[in-house]
Image (tube, rainbow, N blue to C red; front, side, top):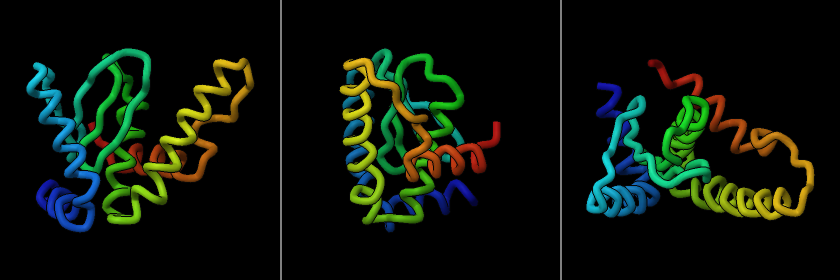
Length: 134
C-alpha cells in the first residue's frame, strides 16, 4: 500500500521530474543498464566517480555507489513528494549549480564545507536515512 501511495504521489503532484527520470531510465535500459529498487524508488548505476542525481521516484548513481549516496538520493524522492512542482526550482536546479560550483572550486584546490551544509542536501540525507529500511 505504501509503495502504491509513493508512486501515486510521484506520478501526480511530482510528475514533472518523474517524466524526465522515466525518459533517462528508458534510455539507460535501452543501453543495457538494469533498474534496481531502493526502498520505494527505482535507481540505476551508471558511470564512475560522479555521485548521483534524482528525478522524482527515479535516481541515478555512479557504479558501486555506497549506501550513504543511495540513501541521500532516495531522500530527494521524498522532497519531490513534499514540494511537487516547486522541486526543480527549490532543490534540483540549485543543487546542480552548487554541485558544478563545488567541482570547479575543488579543482582549483579550495577547501569546501561539508556537502550536507547546504539546506536541501542535508534535508535529503536526513529524509533518506529516515525512510530507507533495509
